[in-house]
Amino acid sequence: MTKKIIIIGSGFSSISASTYLADKGYDVTILEKNKSFGGRARKFKAQGFTFDMGPSWYWMPDVFEKYFNDFNKKVDDYYTLKKLDPAYRVYFAKNDFIEIGDNLEKISQTFEEHEKGSLEIGKAADFILLDQDIMTVPIDQIPNMQVSATYSNGELVYISK
Image 1 (spheres, rainbow, N blue to C red):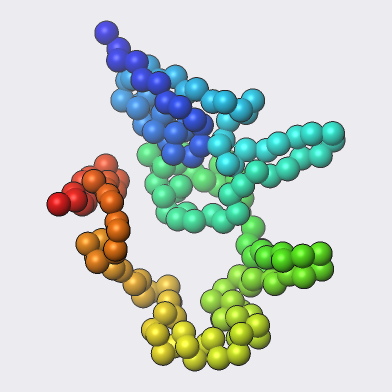
Image 2 (spheres, rainbow, N blue to C red):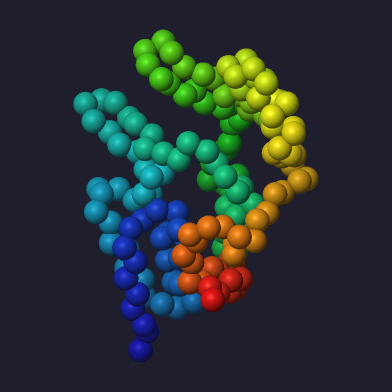
């Protein structure tokens, strides 16, 4: 008898989990409170207007590529990414906003323009991150962290004490 699994919500993680489980032979049902699937990545239409409900950034493209590859598909078969510059705007009030550029140099310059000395402070604190440099902090050094277990790609990577 095939095991039945119910997944609540239809965001990226739910759809991903559902397809992997279905691929393993499980009978999967997704329950969604909204009229359309996609979680924060859905569209909302009202009175002739269409609103993109999220996400603002496309983080970890390698995760999406792996997902599609696992099902013998390619990201390019479904959508095309377009890099925006500015990447986005932060609005404080009408006609009061900051444009955030599409690379670290532009972002740093924007911060320097709005808060003089921020570049030097960042350099002194060693928080300038480059593509090849990743800052990591052991989880046990983060105060008030209450994690019982952490999984990455299906493998247990941390168990709390």
